[in-house]
Image 1 (cartoon, rainbow, N blue to C red):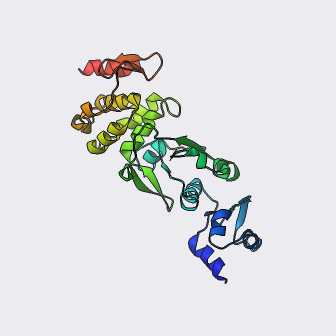
Image 2: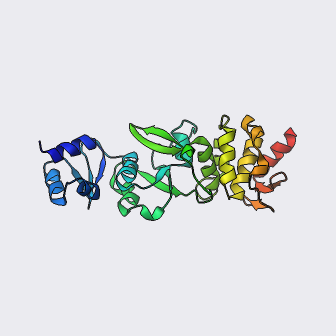
Image 3: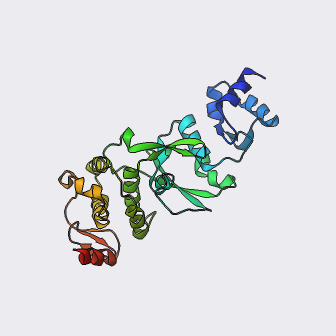
Length: 262
């Protein structure tokens, strides 16, 4: 076995997505990659994109390729990150939606965007950005294991923020609120850190509103004076009722329930 083939087998595994650009950087030219496809060491998915045979590639393999071979800064975000931390009871069996936070969407190649179209496991990408955060920190993410593939994901505090930022474009208020109900053990220090860095008045107010609505113990330990809550009213849902404390419109029954417990 040649040294280059040995390198390929040692640095990839069954189901790995492999780019020709990465192979070339490591001494495997297109002509040699073509020979590997003829010998069934590689399977060509499309121009410049291969997979190691042995199992069908899945969405986590595509993300790992994006990170390891193209050095794109991305992590599992929002609903997806919460799901794989066991903090969401919603389970999508088909057409799973994968939330990804990407610093620069322009760096996402066409093959990645089209990836759901040429594999058997159907899913769809949903790209989110954290451009309302002045800065992001390494501590905002954690390590997740997705079927043996190690990826970064938003910590629960950031994932909750990303969910609220996505209302109503990617998720309904009701779904987001139901997820928030289960977030009883967030770190007040991490929550406060995220909200202090946030320029999204809407999300900051909604984060605090839901925290107090569900009477989460960590909410009482936040210094809200350090959080940008802006001024004036904000509409979260159309036809909602105004919460007097945070000046946001939310579904009416949330206000009625709050008033009944006061």
